Image (cartoon, rainbow over all chains, first blue to last red; front, side):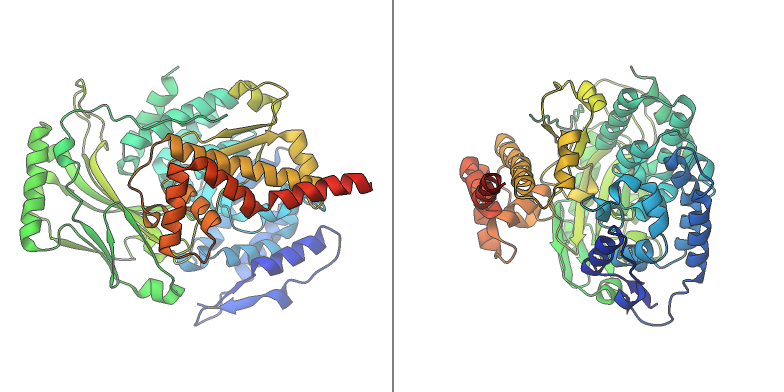
Length: 228
Length: 329
């Protein structure tokens, strides 16, 4: 399949201009790669319009909104071939072409001249780049109707970044679901959730938790949670 | 300024199993990757996707019988019933967090184990990640929970022996992304209010691939970091950024030295944080011999390595520019 990408240097040029309020069209910078049929971008454009418009009436925790719409993003992207999703250039294209306004809304304080705005659009780090981390948040939960959980934890940006996506738990949906469910109910503060996550990470050192089903994952999270 | 910890394996009786995968190989097309090693390939995505992938437990039939016997002997020595243990194969790719358990076989059924196991892309999504590469974990692990007993593994999934095979398609980069050191984090880490930075390697193993584990955290005073970002092009900001980067890399070098790492070759740590530091010292175009030379410098003469990193960063010029700009203003 042929699909669009943006090089890092082109993205940087576009981003640098936009944060200075200079209008830039993305299409002249785009390169199509691969072979066969062109990727149909209409469904992605439609999802982006709905996500962007939803921000206009949202006045609550911005991470909650990010979590809630993670599922929508996942649903439109997950049918794509894995090699496309593995290409950082494709995420850069999506960020600049369709989701720029949403990402600026989400990370407003960084989108100023001299700010660290590139981190959120360059696709390089899956814990920071907004679209990639959204996709992975839904994927870590198993990818099926996860919006109530993905967007169900208060002030959870660091929870998802540090305790799910950045670590092994993000590889194991039953475990990520159990861990997030527990946090949704208990809403532990920074120190206790950090301690619980460390205990889970240490368990990964000795135990292959990929082998755990839903009930087993739930049991081990309960056990880890109950240790003082 | 740093914290570090090591994995504790509180089990006895597993030593006989520890080397069972040493003769196993991963076939990636015509390339071979040995247990505990990583293969680096430069391929177009379509070439990457066409390569067949297979695991071979032993190089020939005789060695395979010896492999099976070593497993059986190891389980007897560990006093574990073969029916409670299974051989598992898990494929992983870090960027998209893809993991699939693609093969499992009870140790009681090893007689039916083929010497070679083909792994297809329909069962292993990680093999379709041409820009990130993949890792394959093989292990003998407990297939079920066992009664708790002192110094014995009991939890389902506890690995008794394991090996990884890595296929890298791009070089990892040094992780240098400072995190704001906020009052809340200071309290949590027990750091005084006037401290400007803290490097937390935590569980990060500097010899293993960066993307397969939690990144080290480099905390920098939140206000200082904000000022550096706003003035990132100013000579003073550049000098301070260089100093912070130098502190971070120096910490990795000292940690490598203090961990008494021995016997490592560059090829084994290419995708790790330590591998990135070696490339900084040697230059991206350096050959294998030069990279090994720089690795040896880090492990044997860390102060010399740190001084040479200063040279690479051209710190003197940044300091001079900063001081000159101060005089001009």
